Image 1 (spheres, rainbow, N blue to C red):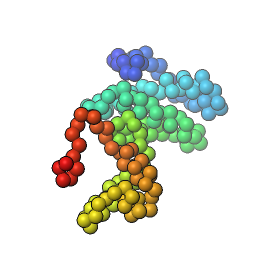
Image 2 (image 1 turned 60 degrees about the horizontal axis):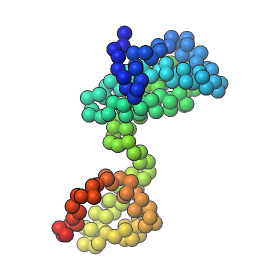
Image 3 (image 1 turned 135 degrees about the vertical axis):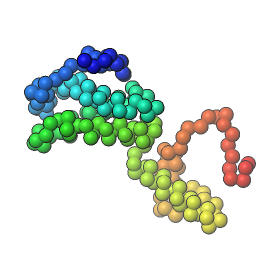
Image 4 (image 1 turned 45 degrees about the horizontal axis):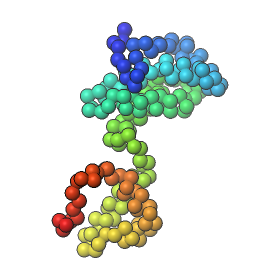
Length: 177
């Protein structure tokens, strides 16, 4: 018996356990567009998510957030699973659920910044270092010119990866002003 854990307002001890046959039947029904079967399949597979989330409880992450990330992975697995794969759903779903959880933990925040924007931001940071190494001022305009980007793209990418700061934190530039 699963011990009682309440996560995201869900009493996990009360989650249903689906048989392999019921899992297969529900998967076929939901792939046919049955919304009730989809809901029952999601709830019936939350134990799988919970079993994977337990691996990450010592990572100082909010358990509710990690569980939600796992549920996103579960839903993605459901959406992308094809009955022709000839594997059990759980075999297919586990890597997708773990991937979503790891992505959430890696990104370190609940605000999802797309990989392309992060890649652009890191290209910008490298360009800034290169420009400053040439004893030039790395302005937004100069960085945009170097990378052949629009100035607003540079600003947007840098804003996307920056951590929020308090209005009360002191702000300094390289010269200490």
